[in-house]
Image (tube, rainbow, N blue to C red; front, side, top):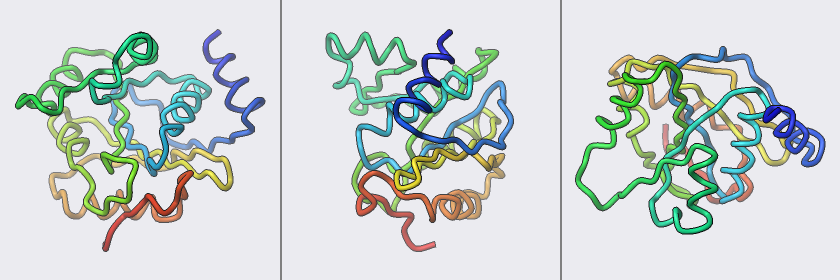
Length: 184
């Protein structure tokens, strides 16, 4: 039933398309970019629901106020206190270890502004949890979300991050000026 609702909104009402060739892994990090607008979360959730998959996502705890907090938790939100000195990598790796199915979506830029120095937490979580990184790109001009590549982190972060960033070079966010893969 949920897939039908997500599909109706995503495909019929909003007119978006998908391009998916990556298998539905039991556990994975979903690396989603570009992230240039708050709308990306909703397009991403609709896309993932429309293809019949469920994902969680981390979001700064400040967004989890009533009534938004109830909505974010209902759709997979995990509140994060970025001020606390606790290892999110360890917490999320433990969540992967204790879950039969778990997809965690992370935007590598860590902000909606242009940031050529992407955060590496998603990579460290995938490496520690020994799960693939599924690359999901959003392209507003064509209204298409693509998921055509997954990589297993090798431990050579520089090489892997270059491959990941190159995947996103042709995707354009809602505000393209707010996206950067940096010099690669």
